[in-house]
Image (cartoon, rainbow, N blue to C red; front, side, top):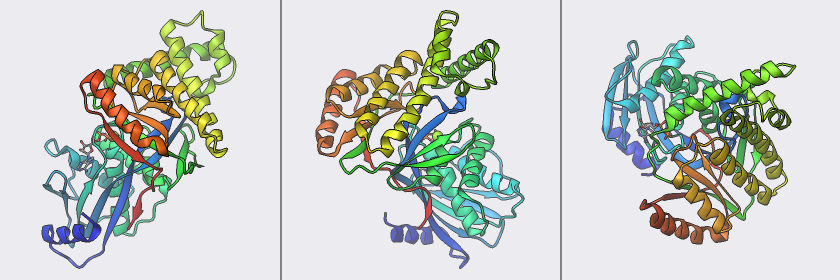
Length: 386
Ligand code: ADP
Ligand code: MG
């Protein structure tokens, strides 16, 4: 549906109150490099993808909020003064969480209607949830003429997911969805919350995302296990080394190697991944700035090897996808997201894309019996009012 068709639909669903209205978009994202570094105070480098959630909104003269999900064909209604977790309509909690956080800032809201639709695959690690939060934050603050800068809005959207939805995500997803820009990746320092745009504009290359479509069943328990292993590593290094060590961010590769014999094997491997991955993110930034896509591709392969062998968060299917990319001599490939399923991100020469997609689909199906989904994207725009 184009925007006019969406407004027509909006007009059929809701009564027109002739009050402030607007249309907004926010994208999903793919993390180009920097995996499992965020909770170690490290660096990540995502880009926004050209898949988005579009939201139409209009104020109401009362204190009701009504949300219509076009994709689910579901309508919900709540009272602004008593927002509570909805066990039945899970999707509505991402929106309520944002409203709740805006109200916590001491801003008084009036009622409004929202209608939205999206084409970001859900639950595949491309952050449809952050897109939904960010587009809601943009819509609600804009309708009420509440001034809030990009960083504040991203942090607010993150708090919505932490506090209302109950998912302890980091800052990456909401940051990139809110602050991303066309033809740019975003380097984020997860310690200081600073960010920097990094040019990603080589006409010869595109990003191809391959969805393994493996259920990420293990991801939660393994995620907690890895976090605790990183904590143990930090404790170890803080005891051994002078200077302040609060996170693996504060440790270099030399130090990790120095204690290899003393560390339990799993702790050594986890630390080795995080510390080397942080270095790869910073090197990737330099490579992109120098338009050295070959170098960047090599760093992506190195990241995958480290995630698979040292951090042990890959799985058979993700390894198959990356191996197929390597065999096809694609510039770069790695798993992206927490692991145990989800997607790979691939750096592919434009004139090889069709061939690459055919090869992935055919061979992945042959080896796993699963039909992979494939999306091609340039670095897309961040959240915006239309
Ligand atoms: P991810 O963020 O990786 O896509 P999550 O499980 O964090 O996966 O978030 C997905 C959830 O976000 C969906 O289950 C749904 O509740 C909500 N959501 C995302 N996109 C939409 C949409 N287009 N319509 C309704 N709900 C959506
Ligand atoms: Mg999510």
